[in-house]
Length: 119
Image (cartoon, rainbow, N blue to C red; front, top):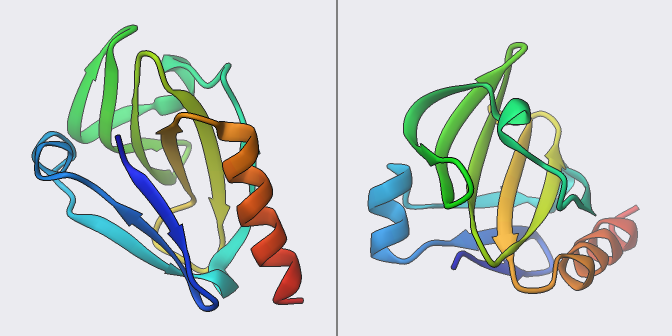
């Protein structure tokens, strides 16, 4: 499962080699100044994903890769048995990161606290 790490300056999304292979991305480093906030969103489903380009999607199993909908580009890596966190970005080529984590509420709280401390 992807790992989210926070430093005083950035949000880091680490992917395993297998996750990188499936999503065709190595991971991300996003400056905290570009993070608007994070929410727990277990209702995030296939309709919200849009056009897959590149990546994989198997309904109910896994969504991994870059998806475009309504002109917004988002990176998605979530799978069955994980809770979904949606991290909204600004001034970035991606509009959001949609990541599967074991505890979405706790991860969102950590990210939102880090973003709030920067303002």
